[in-house]
Length: 450
Image (cartoon, rainbow, N blue to C red; front, top):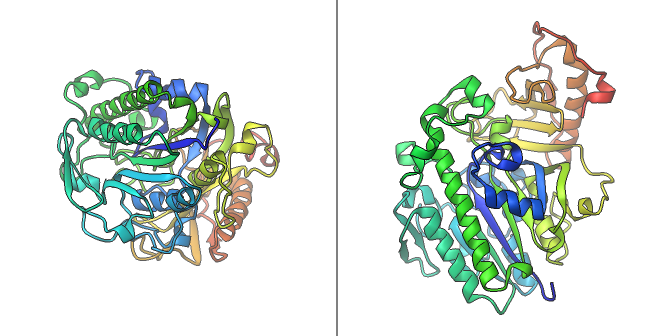
């Protein structure tokens, strides 16, 4: 790249990692994502640090944990003094643009005042897109707060807006963040509306193993959910086609990721806000610039690692206050001191904390705290322990098993360390009550805990 690279974030909402071919989905939903990831960098173990819409967005915009910004649940505005990606890119000479769902204002569901737009120059968005639009009725608000109805299926209409922006900004480097609502459910009818004809394509097809075992609303909603994901991938392909036609692809870095996954009412009464991979693990890839030929990263990567990575890839100094790490050293084999696990904060459904390594998932919950009213706690109880090697679908909770007590103790100390590093107080974590479990731990703790 002879000039500063353009940077585009293609951000989906509530998309599971296993909706992509790279993660074993057999339905050919994501040929464009898969192709770009194979040519670029596949962040294979990408884990959100907050499985709730607003908090995840605050983390991605600032590079800080939700407890640092105070945006620990939905409905809390991003503090106006918080520097965002838009500020950092703008200071480096970039034009900045935001298109789609914002979810970081405490104002009405529709327009967002300039003071609460996170520093973005160009604006075409809605604070709560799921409430101001429907599958074939996309309404967003421009820089003047005027409603703009965009024609077509919602994914397509938003992609059209992205392509228009790119076409009109060929002379200066730009940072474009586009936040889709798909494949999030349509709230007012608790449904997943795909494009016309796509529901029939995916009805009674493949089902993820955890959902096949646990049920929930998956059989009712999966066809629509998959149809939405298929259209998102087609939109990604259209965007890349536009970049090719404008001779801009080689000058552009693309990040594709999502805020959290979807467990279809199997782990609690709705779709996310749990410690399970169905809530936490998302598809993530980078294409272009230093990510070309990066291969598949085997390391555990947090959503918080993505903001410093974007800045680093654009040649912008990473602020010391950011709590994640740039992935660029991993591309050259420099894995020294890279954490073996990611740290997760969970709100709204609970005040919860968790860590996830390649092998283990360990989670705790504050027994006397309200997930909407309280951000943290001094006391937590062990609630979940999963051996992801033996039980990748998290169907057998080993919290309290005597056979796993040693592993739980190691993970408890690591979780406490990560909580302190994130700026939280050192908590007390009380062990789970002893329960009877079948089977014993198959490897020595010190050899297999990761």
